[in-house]
Image (cartoon, rainbow, N blue to C red; front, side, top):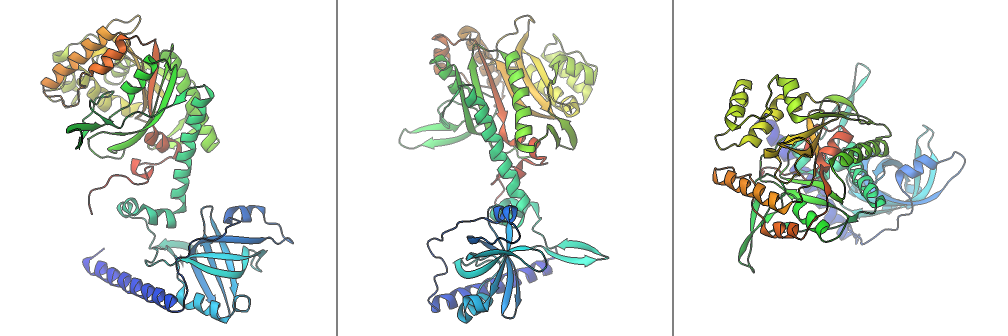
Length: 505
């Protein structure tokens, strides 16, 4: 849009807002409360449409936002939108009186909330509607809605002036939800996904818990934290990057299955698949291992897809995918060999750096073996894994919280689930040997000294907890945002987060 067009649009907006404020003032002069305290709602739009039967009329009390108006002299048709959908209202001067009708006609606007009492009927054109006997203003909208317009070109309806600018939609999500009803469906499905996971875990008898968001020592993942300061204690705290170490403390304490839907925070870049504030569910179960956990994930993902969409087939990241089990299992070394021809097994840091260079994968001088392998996998393998695939049995350097493999020296019992080129979850047979765990965290500390600011820190209290004994345990973290992208077919993480992080306007 040109600067001249933008200025013209701004002037038009200001004119409309000025007119609406004048209408509000007129309403107040007439003694009308434009923002009353309540309204008794008995019915909703979509259920009325679903249950209407010709020849039967139901008395209803309904409320919603006016989305269109057609004034026709002594009668008007308009649509209101509530949380379930839209329905047409028929309003006649003869029913509500001259004064009420004139106020409606001259002082109400699209975007206003209204309450309607009347009865259901079908119009001559066949539309199920409500014949209003009473109307009351519930909230005067002082800003006009960006309602999409339609025009017919060569027999086809063309939509224009829609509220489609991505950045505006994310910044003004409240407007996006009003004028783009399909957006609300995404977030209803997100809630259904979470409820399905919660039901799945509750059925197994696991306990939902809450752990600290503000942590004196961050851990459970390799990431940079956000730092804040607690004035009363006079100390810096960190927004958690994961809740893993606290949940494992609870397994030490005697709970045999715990889970938490957690807001986690990682001080890293923004992209289509990354938001610095994100949601994940982590759960930990005593006496189980990563093989058991893979079966649980297959069952859970199939159940989520069927519950939310009624099918196991989804479209995600440009690919059609079927979530019906079983899923392929492939070691990370075999995956790298399959897609690059390079064998990384047993290679030291220097050799791995050379392989990365040959593959055109950038690595930093501070990167250790684990980060180099991760970079090779992320650039050369992950994008090619379309069907659900468990990448298993990682080199020990990549997984400082994971138990050593029972039969493969140098590896650990870990898996990531990759679907359509993106990681959906990360799981381990948890490391419960306190001596081994201390050695691994000390190695992480050495990496931090080399300049790796994402390496883990030593958490002495967590190590102390392990010294009291933790049973064999399986644990997993599942990203709710990416899972919602998968199930709803959204291309950007911002489309599944109601209020994504944005740069200042």
